[in-house]
Image (cartoon, rainbow, N blue to C red; front, side, top):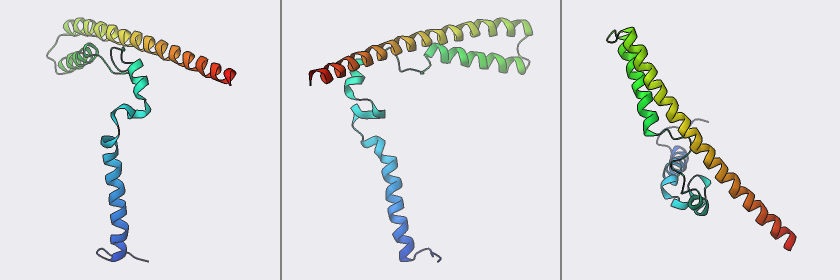
Length: 132
């Protein structure tokens, strides 16, 4: 069976598919703000003390990575001597590594906060189970 453009069957298939695609695109915009990505508003309040979201590079890390890229490009273009290249690369590499280490530390702190919250929730759950 062939479906020809403009036929009623083509229209019958195109309209629901188009509406489904529109719904999928608009759904994230219509979701309540407190329920994004499966996180409840309460959990969001508990984690609000964190400095930045996990895995998000800091400005320092982003800047150091960009500088490393720029130094590499300048060296490849012949605009930097090897001595200057090594010196600048070492400096920006240290900055990037320090920023990554700081992010790792923040992530470990966040993990500890999450683990503590889970422990408390488990204790509450056990308390409810024993109290019933």
